[in-house]
Image (cartoon, rainbow, N blue to C red; front, side, top):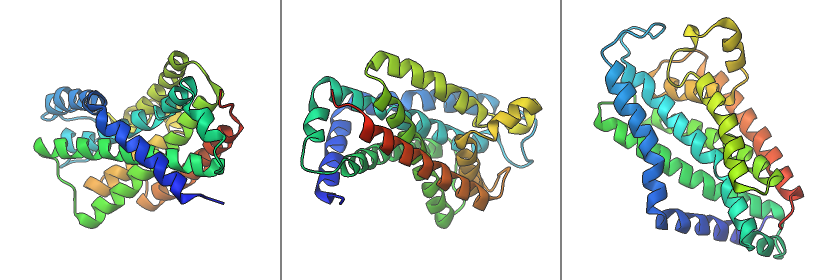
Length: 254
């Protein structure tokens, strides 16, 4: 049985940690800002092969940068599990009279909220350089894709955190995984520009469909039907959350 009080307490703890860590908020925005400033403004007047006519590079890039922010932030949520294990908090909550499902849901809720805040901050900043979302309904659809991206990669972060005990090793392994996922997703360039064998790999990358769905929602440019992107992202998120919760339940608290 799910203890919603436990879910709320863990969510509130994560939010307090996030708000107090001003450097974490600023640091999470530096990389997206660099991409927007140097890539977006630098290539905005250039004709990029494979892009639809009438779409400048800023419009094409912003959904990719939002997806990148969600990817990195969500995957690194597992690091908080390792911190809690290191300082004994994980052991305390594991022996509390609440189910581990409630603990997993609380962590996922907190991680999703902080990740969404970072994604929305990037969207607000991108509007300063001229980006605009199509309409309010499509903005709400974009939020759904953002949540699904967050769920998918929070699950991935939980899987790695549940199997590892070394924080430095976690960072190395996660970066080794998420950088290929990022570059295969088409966040920075149209996938049609990639060689065929590389493009095939991009089709098994969950982020490909998340970013394509964001582009379809925000600027009406997509390589796949938006409902297909939505269905695939929903499937990916459910599978990864199930696996993340499963491995977390099987993990040791010390």
